[in-house]
Length: 125
Length: 146
Image 1 (cartoon, each protein chain N blue to C red):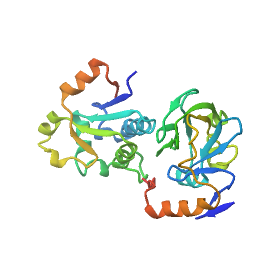
Image 2 (image 1 turned 180 degrees about the vertical axis):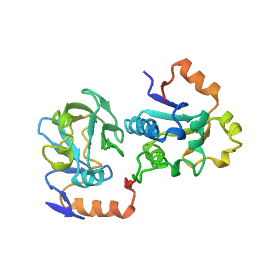
Image 3 (image 1 turned 60 degrees about the horizontal axis):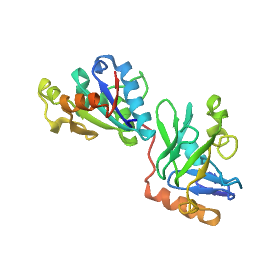
Image 4 (image 1 turned 120 degrees about the vertical axis):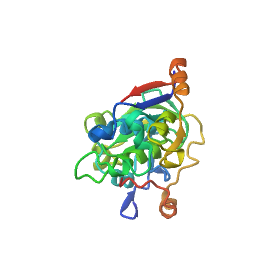
């Protein structure tokens, strides 16, 4: 049985901040349970991997916990974060624009291969 | 009772200071484990407690339970290799016992260690406070203020 979980953010993005807690919370919990966790942010969710974006977003109005705080929580538990290379192109960004918690870019082929080979389970948000 | 920074460390227990978990030998080869009151204060309100399944074979420094507070997540990491033999089922419905009575009704698991040297990482008696103070000095514990 695989111990690796891939969390894919493709429909949950900064346009609906309220939804952004769940994927990072699940990432934090899974990592705390000692599963190997990779979080890939793509499409509009890819913006969350750019410096200065997630730290301006709060999930609950009036609550000081930001989306970036959740990313740090999950990262602190051991989750790895990845940006999509096509996403960098889409938003005219480079790897230098990524937050420190982001390990770099994960290509679509690498992700699809892991899913099809059964080396990971996937949760999509 | 040893008190350090307003935290109680009952001296009949053994402590993994780094992971803030206490252990109590039960006399039949099994050991009861729980979070210290210091960890409970750091966590704040616990909403969910999820132990590893019964008979789960855990390794030293790996998770054998997870606590969730809604805005944070905490992992209970083992001080030795072993097997989960019992859960505190009361925590399923009343996880707040982890905060209210961390050394009593808020115990987490009963485990059976794999090796006889399971005490190697643990401190007890007069060693507890210096070990705790030294660990606090390092600042290596995680700030969960978000």
